[in-house]
Image 1: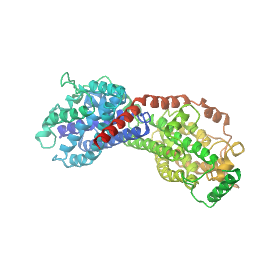
Image 2: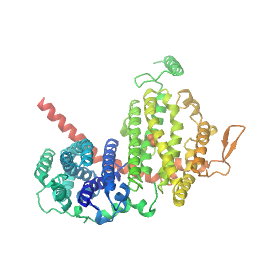
Image 3: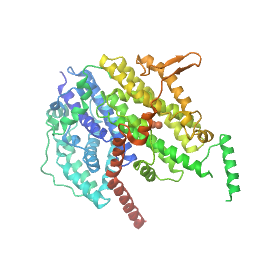
Image 4: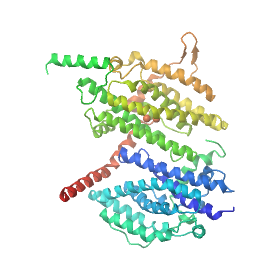
Length: 251
Length: 317
Ligand SMILES: [Fe+2]
Ligand SMILES: [Fe+2]
Ligand SMILES: [Fe+2]
């Protein structure tokens, strides 16, 4: 493949949207009230829409996979490049909100920068995404404040979620080889430079939510290189179920 | 008010409805009108919400990204329908919490169709095609019902339901144009969903208790049997286009009547499901109740936070 780095770079962004969208899709109809149910479904829908745009682009020049669905459904576990954060389970609503917010702040910064890419298609996608992501961030940030500075129980649950998810945040800023190559080509965003800004913004909101900001240590990572947590195989077994059971069919 | 005055008000009220005027929440209305509307609208709202579950069941397994997005959008629409309907019902003086309470304790019903399981992907097609299709036939007349908020909610809901119906048919069509396994999956779904869909129109006219009063209030314009017949007449040709066969050996075009004759509906099954003994009644209720109970701390937090914020604002102001 001629553009392996570009292809990998696109998938690195898209897989986050796919897997987070998939996780949110599990919640549909089970939210704490109708309004949050609708909002989370809407975020999932945005993320799946974004995924499609990226995969369609990647499929347009991939030699291995011809369609968005091939890319979404036919890869092996080790070939998915999403960060570990987005594959974490919906343990309770605090985790859903925490995961969303910790991702949204990053996602917003990434889309903001990606609007300056030299790649026209990615630029167009980023311009569309940023509007959606800014809504996601507002939603998750508002809920984080409500839960953090709500009742004693919600405070404790929200802190538990932040503590549990914190160790996955540093991976967002680790650069892969294809990211390096794309940064050099003026296409990719140097996310490593966003790190301080990210932690500053997140800390500010956690403070406002009366939550403790965990220490920046004991981080774990691997998703970007295809080494996922034990949850991931189960996500794929649902995601890929139809395509694996009934190969080569049109749906 | 004296009995005579009430009688007078009722006459004026009925005359307004007869003139096709809309009744608005602040208008005087007979208590029975209010209660009947609370019952019907909340039941409709509950159906939308419980209806999210069988379809939501396939979101994570949808066979393509396009289908996944469409299904998410559809289930989101259903939640939206629930929201407008609860809001319409609240104008009659009941809270959403009270309505949930009635749902969770089994006092309020929801459409029985959602007590059947979605076991294959084709069920998502069949639900859109048949269940949304039947819902439209039930609901289009309600766009002109007498209670304003309900009528207006229905206008919006019906537009979206007809989109769902076409989308469901399109899923079925894709399956029927696909492999033999896909076509068999579609036929199997039709076999399982056909009869429960016919039951969506309710008991036969002979057994239906509410019809006469409902007709007067324009909660109903046609009888259950008329609507059911309309559904069958509309759907059989669509099954022909799909190349699927309706699982009813007695189904036959009646030239003289200009309708399809059809076989006997298993009303015992219908009543079993209505009474809570369908294949998924327990699962649906458990899912709703646990969503509500697991969400208590979240809703409490939102309330506590809003109060804190208001206190701060007041101090600052
Ligand atoms: Fe609906
Ligand atoms: Fe409906
Ligand atoms: Fe619908």
